[in-house]
Image (cartoon, rainbow, N blue to C red; front, side, top):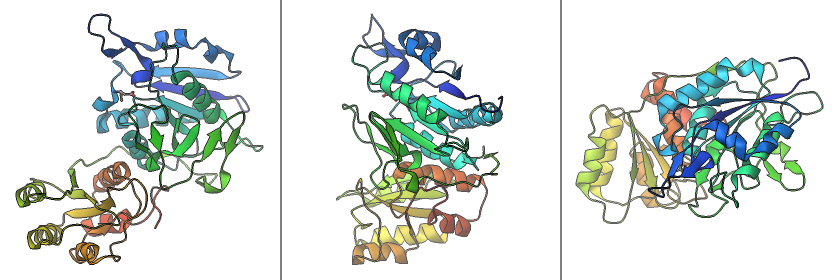
Length: 345
Ligand code: ASP
């Protein structure tokens, strides 16, 4: 990359943004990146270099997994010195999981990695894809007066809002504003101007060196409680062979039923070294286990506080920390600390 010249790498993984209707079945299917460019001739109007890389075959984001996250980390790390920023086109269904995973796996990141997609395919007249794509590229290329990237972190850009990736959740399957970052203010808003909310951006060290991580341990489960949940369900989850951690989705500020068997299974899990992390089923707000008796009993059973972490961030963070082979006590400690802005403690 010649000094001063700007360049962005566009990585196309799949998703609605690059889909087209199968004339026989009517279902949306992936098409290739050349066709995507045909529908967005505006890409040529950027005054800087945009290169592209395509997943082959592109995939619906329901098929994204740790292997695909590793591929993304590899593409970014192999091309890190050649580009000012990266834009990842991705299906919306699991975009918040991928953004969360990448935020942990790309340690020392000091360039923008912006994930975006759309609710309507880019070839459709009313598509939201064009706007999302063009603004994401602009943000990925944006630099301050010293030439440093404005957004040195993994983000999702959707419907005018730039959000910290590991704070997002897909919350709408219909509207164009598919994502929200309930517990963290947006990092930028795109209107006539793109207004950056600089006081909440992450500030990596200027001389930070990218350290890509590839090891993820998937021996994790999510358990969402509900009134009437049966003991055999809870017992079956905690009894899973090889299980190392559970994200427990609780009520409100971290509450769960006051049933003797429920607490017993949690205590036994803690004794076996299984880590249970408490996150709330509510979209916004934080776990506070000391607040009610029903939450306090979880604390006493050794449950870790997930604070205002999303389920997406909690699961991928557990995979990341367990992938390091850390002992349970160390994982428990790190789950309560923000590593890359994923929670407010
Ligand atoms: N099923 C699609 C996907 O996540 C939905 C989308 O892109 O919005 O790949």
